[in-house]
Length: 73
Image: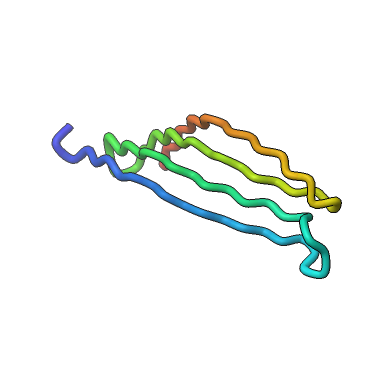
């Protein structure tokens, strides 16, 4: 597979659902690796780390590994 490509992914996102209140927000850090064996196919492996605050500003943390595949025809 001489045309295959690996790419790295780093993404940070923040959503504040109510700017008038402390809390009620969601932060996410995503680190990932994509592999394209051909131009039209991709395999993705991501690690997501989440910080969520409810309307009372109580923090909950979570993490997940995600695997996905897509092909286009």
